[in-house]
Image (cartoon, rainbow, N blue to C red; front, side, top):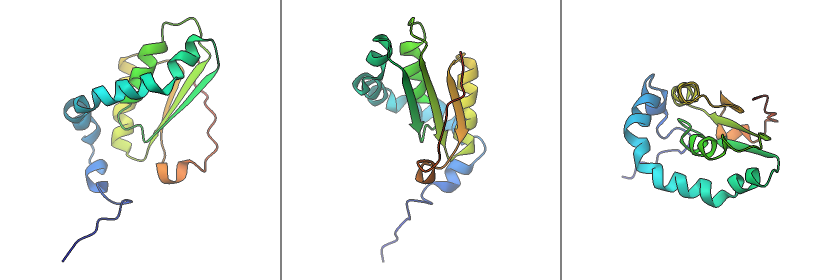
Length: 131
């Protein structure tokens, strides 16, 4: 007998745990550093900011904000401040951890909020984060 886990609920209990975001950030996130760095480097968004263009990033399913953290670290000291990030995730625990990180690292132009990636694409987000 084979058990099939529906993607919409796979891991839901784990992600719903109050401290899961902190646990993931301290233990699991380190495994993802190389792919995260590659993602940010290959995306072209840092180069667009360096070129002075307007850049709005939507980090959908942002988890604890690890991709946003790499992007912000890469652009925060550039003269072009014409960029923003919205980070969304359905897990309140992960979002809480991302918000804590944003505060610890003094992120500017970043907004973090709870939203389900499976439906948030239908929402019309407008970034209100300001420097």
